Amino acid sequence: MIEIKEDSVIVSTGFKNQYDLPFLWLRDNCQCDECRIVETQEKQFLLHTVPVDISPKHVEVKDENLLVLWPDDHESLIPLSKIKQSGVARYPERKKWIGNFVPEKYDWSKFLDDSDVSTDALRTFISFGAIILTNAPKEQNSLELLSKRLGPIHETLFERIHNVSITGHVYNVAHTSKELPPHNDFASYKSQPSIQALHMLENECEGGNSIIVDGLEVIEDLRLENPSFFNTLSEFNVPFRQFDENNETYAEAPLIKCSSDGSIESFRFSNQLMQMIDPTRSGLREFYKAYHDVSARVHQDKYRSTFRLNGGEVLIVASFRVLHAREEFKPNGKRHLQDAYFVYDNALNNALL
Image (cartoon, rainbow, N blue to C red):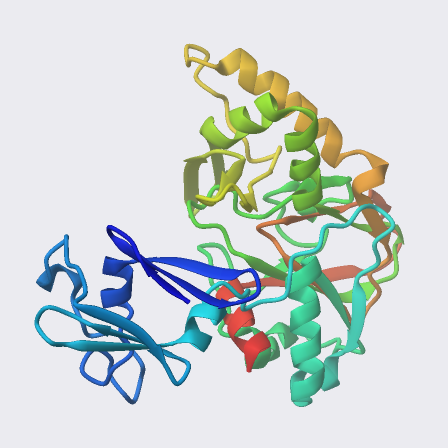
């Protein structure tokens, strides 16, 4: 069950469950009361206080715990169950989708007042990146109430709750009746808002269907079909700018952000906020070929989920992966939408409660 190597311990905990545990990992993950704060389980042991080449005096498994005796006679205790759980995903698996996807619908009041419903809704949201709340109030600023399940509103420089209609001040294409192409908001922020809630108060106009695109599916297809383009969009910084008469935001970042294991963390895409790129930059031609490809993809019908968002409905999207858009509409009636931003980590927390 145990094999001591030069700088690690191999522990077998069952069929196909074998772990190669470095000595430093073992010392750093001691679960005893001396190394952890009992009430909070926060680690208080400091790794640099032991030699980098530390080696145990003795290792054994006893009562489903791994016991390690160190040269200073400190005894580390690590439950085998914790070792097994360390590689288990804490959150629902992210699931990609294409154009035939229809966001799951949940009743507004039940989402706010019923913990079981909200947990199910949030877990669905984490998996697919989009849900719709129905029977929402048609009063302005009702999005404030979502803080109960999504955490505090993530304010931007422009408005806490943003009004989208064609009757007010126009400072971007959303305030017209024109088509709004797929994008996520505030690409001009270095840290973009990660959740967007779009609350339709009134929708009497002809046309103007809502569109969402799973950027995760788009980008994974790109990686599979053209790895070179994927790599270019992961490495080439693109400038984005958004402004009005009082504010200006600006950021430079790649369209695709990946974690260290290669999984996609976010897709930043906003054709309308993208700025002129310095033509002397290296890799410009390669970038534009890759950008041409991904831009064509987000406009393909196969990736676009299209539906009508009616008055009293709220579309909630994980905006770091799901792009939103709108078809052109005729201004022959009232159309008023409000939107606000929230923090994805707060939704993750509430999904686990």
